Image 1 (cartoon, rainbow, N blue to C red):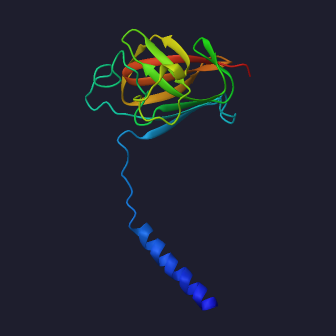
Image 2: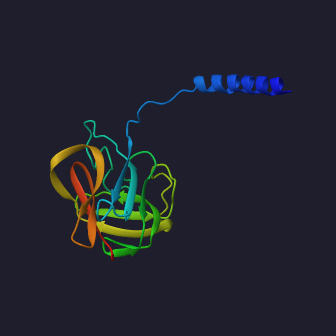
Image 3: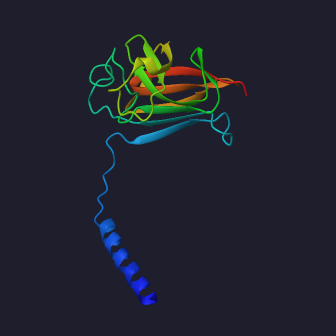
Length: 182
């Protein structure tokens, strides 16, 4: 009996082991995923987390070839960017409840519309539905001195009670003020 069980386990290991040996893995994504956190202090719990993919310029132009002006954009590549607020947050000039949202944008030369949507786990902006917006704000873009090849998101501290979520690509910069009551 004991030999039969051992033999059966050996056969199963060979069958499933061979299957795993044949498994193919994809290479590095052309728009790799990244995560940006905002913590008020290095060892503090996070207040915001953004999960996004980082498309590359590759001799293309923001607002024309990439993130076209006037069109809803997933604010990155691949799946729509997700943003998680760990507590209620003033986002721009509006309060958003703690939770996870998709982050969409409508880029413009003089103004960007930033959208937090209740739709989660969506690929791109193809199924974007404005009736599921949780919040919309508008912000003015600015121009940075350095050109960024990869779309990037970071947080810049902004006084004692907040930060700015800063998106950058090529020389375009879009900053969204965030504030909290600690």
